[in-house]
Structure formats: structure tokens, C-alpha cells
Amino acid sequence: MPTEPETDYDPELGRKFIFVTGGVMSGLGKGITAASTGRLLKNAGFDVTAVKIDPYLNVDAGTMNPFQHGEVYVLKDGGEVDLDLGNYERFLDIDMTFDHNVTTGKTYQHVIEKERSGDYLGRTVQIIPHITDDIKRRIREAAEGNDVCIIEVGGTVGDIEGMPYLEALRQFAHEEDEDDILFTHVTLVPYSKNGEQKTKPTQHSVKELRSIGLQPDILVGRCSDKLDIDTKEKIGLFCDVPTEAVFSNPDVDDIYHVPLMVEEEGLDQYVMEELDIASEALPEDERENRWRDLVTQNTEGEVEVALVGKYDLEDAYMSVHEALKHAGLEKNVDVNVRWVNSEKMNDHHADRMREADAIVVPGGFGARGTEGKIEAIRYARENDIPFLGLCLGFQMAVVEYARNVLDLDDAHSAELEEDTPHPVIDILPEQYEIEDMGGTMRLGAHETEIDANTLAATLYGGESCTERHRHRYEVNPEYIDDLEAAGMKFSGYAENRMEILELGPEDHPYFIGTQFHPEFRSRPTRASPPFVGLLEAVLGDDPHTVTTEEVSH
Image 1 (tube, helix red, strand yellow):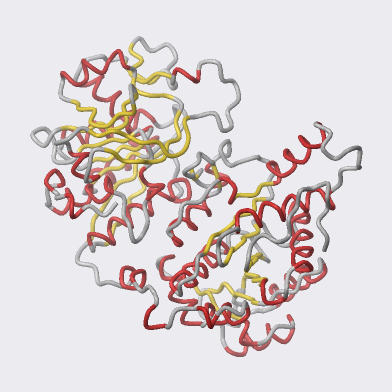
Image 2 (cartoon, rainbow, N blue to C red):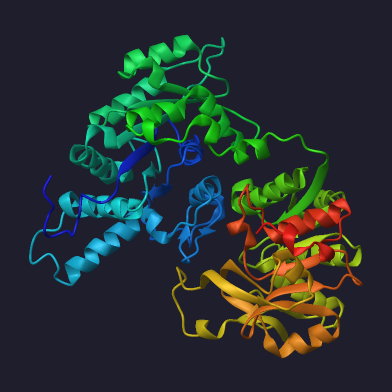
């Protein structure tokens, strides 16, 4: 297909593409299926990247409620994106950028801005070719320089908001050689009351996909158990794919076992053969196997960690939960997360917290539940319970210390209590004139300087670290001297911004807070230092004395 001169679309970028769509219902696990496929291809020696398509009108995920969409994941360049990109970074062990997230808002905004500036020279601006070419351009540019790019199309086939993307994919297939593109469709295979695996939902979903002009090459059935051979044959017959192209993705106890499950099904080998890259793969005995070794190791104990937040759902704190698991993999223990609702501390949730071995207070926005978080921090500090505060948790640790050690009873964050007489947390100077909410905070990767001979320096194995941020308020410099004179140490900073706080070993076995979000850079094969230190404190190791050689990050 010739390039449309009015759209700056270059169809030559990229090499191999795997498109992953979903049918029947949302939340099936398209992202984990796609990420697992990528993990196996990376194990085989290929450079793999990913793109997540989100058909909503938001430009990014930054203003979205965690109740509706889970956590907002932050990339190194400050992109606020869907939590699925966090799974891609963790599974593929790569750092992605905002270019790897395509949203309807972003695409339409770009095309409309070009129209307003006259770039289309009077032509009528339409869904085809302008929107579809912009979608294809974004995919190809994100894929450039990689062997394989996996593109997950959010939502469910048949959703009206997804139609421009599926049309773009249809055009994409028309432009590519047959062995350069692969369509994977993930569907639900439910059980009937008599225990039969039902294929009709899959049949209808594929029919919907084919009506758009897309024929899946691979079908992945999400079911509580592996698909029976009869089920696979029936799906293959009615959906016009070979039986060997129908794969099971059954429920597992841990998402990190999904790559092992689909590898057992032979999905990676089938993908490589269909993309004509099997001959380029590493021999099986030379492929990366650290992932398998880590996730299948026999653990030697359990640790109970209380996660104190205002949301009672795992997706709102997905990266924190995963970072705790990664630390558990490194320390060879199972980490059981106790969800503690900070709004219900007067109920039984305070007891749930007290039964835990460690306490984590994660990031968040808004005043709701903050008094419960402050009480959790006080309990951890006064009772020598290992504690980790992240972003808002870091800020509330400052508030708690100001109230209960400096006796500034009304101390608070100006973000949460505008009229507080002691705003120990105040707005960033560059935020004074900003009115828009989206994309205006201190976002993305920034370097932190770390004082020598501190817990933070020991954890990070040096005197600097680079972590990702997402905040608008910070420690008020007017209170720093008083806080440090009373025993709180700000061991990490970026110029005049306080980034890490800690209490010395003479005051507490492990009490640390970070203004940044270390959970966003944690990986199964590379656990985050503050999380590893938290577990070391629980297990009786002194995290203040870990040698630099033992630091994995």
C-alpha cells in the first residue's frame, strides 16, 4: 500500500508483529497472555517490545479513578499509563515510554491539532486514512529496532470505540507479508452446569472478528482448566484455525507461572514457526531459564505484610503488590499481603494490621483514609515494626513525626488540609500557576543523591539512585531542620527536594520512606532495594549492614 503523503505514515518500520485481541468479556488476561508470549520469545534470544492500545478518550490514564481502571503506572519518561504496561515491563524486563501506549484521546488530539494548523492542506480529515494511519504510525514507530512487537488491543471485539483500531489492524495485515504478522485472539471458555467446556462464546467472538475482516491465526482459551482435546478440535473446526493453533491458558496460582503454562502448550514454538523466526531462536538448552528457576523455587517460609490503603482492591496497588512478590523471590519466602482499609482502622482492620510482620503505606491522592495511614505509621514507628512508606506514605510519615515527636498537633499536608498551621508538606514551587490536572505533576525518572553511611546508601549500594516519581507536593524546607534535630534523617534528596527519609538503627530496625515510587522499577529478576530491605528486617537480617555486593538493583 502506498504511503499517504498527507499523514507522514511510513509502512516500512518494524519487523514482526503480534496483535492480541480479546473476546466475550473484558478482564480475561489478554495482557498477561501477551506478556507471557513476549517473555518466552525473549528467553529464545529475541528483542521484544510491546504496545498497549487503550480505546478510551482520555489522553492518558493519569486522571482515571483506580476503582475503574486500577493503578496508574508511571513510565521512565513520565507517561501515565494503564497497569498492563507495568506487566509488560516486569515480564520483558524493559523500560518503555509513553510512545508504547496508544489511546483514542492521544490519536485524535494529534490529528485534530494537525488539522487546526493546516497540515492537511484543505483535505477532509476522516477516520480513514488519517486516524487509522496515525494508529499504524504509532505502532510501527514503537516497534522500530526490535525483532518482535506485541500489540494488545484493549477492550473487547465488538466495542464501538475499538472499531478504528481493528480497521487499522486490517490495513496493517494488508500491508505486511503473511509471515510478518500474527493475530492472537483470547476468549473465554466457560463450563456448563454439567461440567462441559462450552465453545459457543468463542465461536461468536471469532465471527464478530471475521466480520471486521480479521481472521485469527491463534486462539487462546481462558478457562479454569486446560482445554480438552475435543474442545480444541471443535474450536478449530468452527473458527477455521488448525487444532494445533488452539491453546489453553488455564487459571494458575501466580501470574508468573503463565509463561511456563503456555510454553508447556507449545505456544512460543508455534508463534516462532508462524513468524518464520524459529531458525533464529537460541537452542533450547541455551535459552534464558532464570525466570523458571525463580518462580518454581521452593520457598523457606512466609512473611505477612500489611498494605494500608483506602482501596480494597489489588489492582489499585498492583505494582506494590508485585514488588513485594519480587522481594519474596529474592529472599526465597512467600509474601502474604494483608489488605488493610485505612478508613476502617476502628473496625477490625487495625487488628489485621497488628497481626502482620511489616507495614507498607503506598501512594495515593485525597484526604480520605489518611488519618488511618498516619495511625498505621505511628504504630509501626513506636512498636519497631518494619515500615516502608511510598510517596503519600512518605509524606504521611513526615506528618506523623511532626505531630507526635515535634508536638505540632495540627501538622498536615497542605494538599489535604489547606488551612493547616503547620504545612510540613507543601506544593512544589513550579506547581503554583498550574490549573490542568493531567500530566502536570513531577513525573518520571529522576536521580536522587544519597548520603553515605545511611540505610538508603546501603540498600542501593551507592550514593545515588534513579527512580520514578508521581507527585505534586513535597516536604516543606522550613521544617527540615526541626525534623532532623528530633531524629528523622533525610538521606536522599534532589537539590532542595527531600526524596528519602529514615530512622537510624538505634531508633528503629527498619523505617524508611521514599517520595518516589520504587515499585515501578521492580522486576521478578531484579527486586527493588527498599522492598528487599523490608523483608530482610522481618527475617532477622540487619538491612543496615547488607554489603554493596549483595544489592541487586
